[in-house]
Amino acid sequence: MTPIFPSKNHATTPFVGGYRMDKSNFSNVKLSEEFFHISFTPTNWLTDPWKCIEATERWTRPDSAVLETFDTEKFKENYSRKAAVLSDVRSSFSGNTVDDIIMIMEHERFLKGPKGNLLHDGVTNRAKIETAISNGVPIEIVIPSFAGRPHNPAAHKRVAPDLGEMYALLHLLDISDTVREVYPPGLLFTLILDGTIYRPFYGYAHNEAVPYEENLNRQISALEAENSLRTIDMWPIYQERKDEVAAIEAEVREHVSSQWNDHDLPSRQDLIAALRQGVETTPITVALIEMYKSGSYKNVDLDSFFIRAEKALLKRAEHAAFEYTVLLTIMRRLDLVMTAFPDAIRGTVHPKPDQYSPIMRDAKTVISPWHGTAIVRLDGSIVTEYEAIVFQEPERYKAWFVRGDEAPFYYEEIKLP
Image: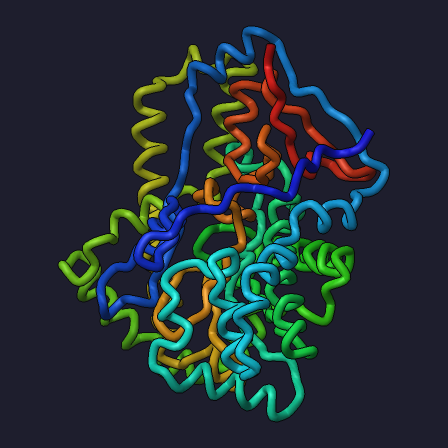
């Protein structure tokens, strides 16, 4: 059997005033002008606990199948946007290489957010493109992203990258390959994986993020994208400047602490809610599983249990949000990313002025690919959702495994009679 990869002719999301009108805009939530650098993706919980009970009562499970190998070429053929973009822009090429590159990068199928962001100050990023062309090298774009997949049964069983990450990588490859039509060296997206550096305040083991990078690199190789995509871990970059970090950390902590409950952080509760999803809660999960599997819940004051669990989770989530704010503020003060990559354009998952934000997911997807599990919808679109929605309606999905995988590479939505 082969995976379902329908027609390439997916509908595009309309633009109004230069902004993509989809839920992804709401992921760029900022705490204040001073804390502009603190961005996060809101959660998208769609689980109905009673549907989960009903699914258990029905004793149903998703259908499944195994692929001996994943057909990467067919995937690229059906989901690449390069041909469509070239068809749109080819007649508009001016012959000015810089302008043509910018036109490609800002095409509505490639750009998330307003077109003015890339050249917001009118100088910096254009000069970097010109310098790369002068030197005959790829135009580098660095994007802190791909935070990894720490175990989280509600969000995803799989801890390795799935079809959602491969879809995101293909989006980036498409941009580079399209730029190659006017500038053969193309673009080089350097993905700075930030999962390891986030592990301490999320509560996961430091080395839990390591296999994710290795598996992501395998996807890059499968796409034959090594000349356009590469990964680097944020942790060594941060450690190289540990003395400078130590010199300012106390002052940054004091500054963030002084404003943590102030109006300068109006979206603090939103940040806490977002990071609550990611913090380690396995001990609570284990307790719940054991209680209902053993029947010992009858001997537990469940009201007290849930009240105490809620307090513990909120405390951990607020700690994570505070540490996240401190970390990103330190990184901003040190200009960590751009000092390490001075010739690169700063990329971002969340659109900001003077940064390049490429589209890396379907317009119907709210969360990032690494936050959930990939689902191929009936219309052929690839979206990412929390896996809990599969568990509550397993009849609607078919699980596709690649030989040797411990969890589905993606789910296929099934049309019910």
